[in-house]
Amino acid sequence: MKIIKLNVDDIIELKKEHPCGGKIFKILRVGSEVRIVCQTCGRDMTLGREKLEKAIKKINP
Image 1: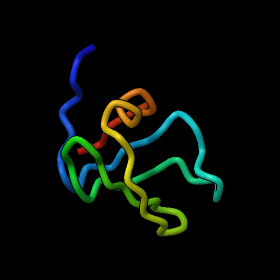
Image 2: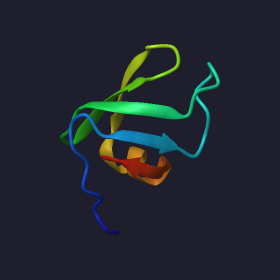
Image 3: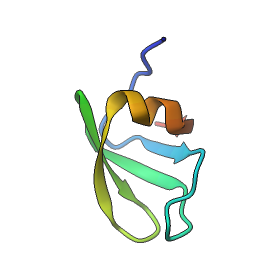
């Protein structure tokens, strides 16, 4: 599997919606786990990098 280059402050669009209805997230921290925040409701969450990379639809630096 190809590793996707992720940077802090990148805006990503995920394939599935967050329960609030938003699909746009901002990256806060990158590592083996990635911390993201929903741009619709402000909820932040930490996901495993592998799981997040599978869920990404588009990256806007």
